[in-house]
Each structure stands twice: as structure tokens, then as C-alpha cells.
Length: 223
Image (cartoon, rainbow, N blue to C red; front, side, top):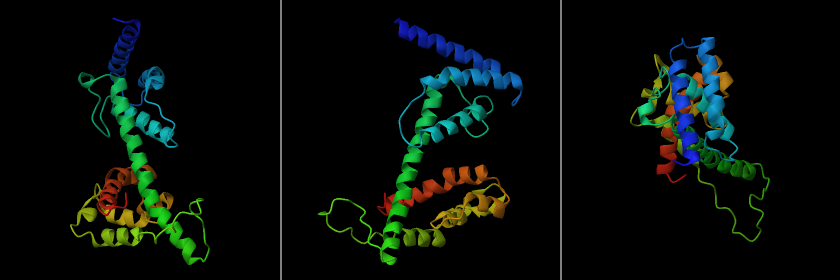
């Protein structure tokens, strides 16, 4: 076995041991926190890296996911060593989050850029979106916002209304999607209106509303 593989194997065994030890202690106990911090230190420079503007956010979400699911599986599947090493498990989650950020950014651009073009037209300000002058003029932007609004309000299958936060039918995907379309209501304001924390609302929106919004945008050819 090569030196590199030997080092990797030793690290994987060390991490496995630390996870077993950490999970013996109560959640939130100083002993567990100390062991989890040790695992984070050992794994952080082994994780997937890329220089995208949202990498740090995705990494933060990954560490949060790690702390919540390494022993108890509070927000996802509990870590199962039979499926792979801690590093493999964390990398799979991190890559999924990066893909989400990438798709969400595309979706946001598909919504906001046409909006900016139309705003600049209606304000009578001619903004050159592309510096290459000899390109044909930008055609009228697709009215994606109106389409999204009609789709969310109509909710023909009732799926958006049905998808709600547990025991809060008033806080559903239909309501949140409409509130978050530009000009969007801030999470702070929504948190005060619904009496729910910003992370609760935001993670529900990320997990349940955005995928539906994205699916519609893809079907309509906006993405």
C-alpha cells in the first residue's frame, strides 16, 4: 500500500473512532462539542474546494448538517459508516449544496435580469446590458415574473398550498413564493409576520419551495 493510501486509511480510522466517542456523549455537551471540533479540524482541509462566491455558505451549511446528523439524524439521514467515510459523506452533501446554490443563482438571474431590463425600459433609461455594440438589440425580456405569479396563484394541483410547515397550513409554498418574488418581502419581516425563526422559514423555502419554482422555470424554458 502506498504511503498516501496508508495515511488516508489511518485518518479514516481515526475519524471513525472519534465519531463513535462523540456519539456516546449527550448532544450539546462540552465533551461532544470538543470531539466534533476535532473531527472538523481533521476533515476541513480534505473537503472538496472550489472558488465560487457561494462556497463559504455551502460549507457553513455542511458543518451545520454534520453537527445535526452525525449522531442523531435531526435534519437528514444519520451518518452510516457502512456507506463510506466521514469525508465522503460530507463531500456528497457539500456538492449537493453547491449545486443548489448554482441553480438558485441561475433562477434568480432568470427572474431579476428581465425585471431590470423592463424597469430600465419603463424608466426611460437606456441601459446597455452588453458592451458589444454590434450585437442585435436584446429582444423584449420574457415576462417570467407574471408567469411565475400566475402559476403560483393558480396552483392548479393545489401542491403549493399543501406543502406547508408542520402544523402551520398558513405558511405554505404558495404564500412564500409569492412573498419572495421581486420586490420581495424580507425574511426578517416574514419571520415577524408568521412568528417563526428566519432559519426555519429559509430552510423550508430552500428545501420545498425553490425546487418547485425551479421545476416550473425549467418546464417553461426560463432556465
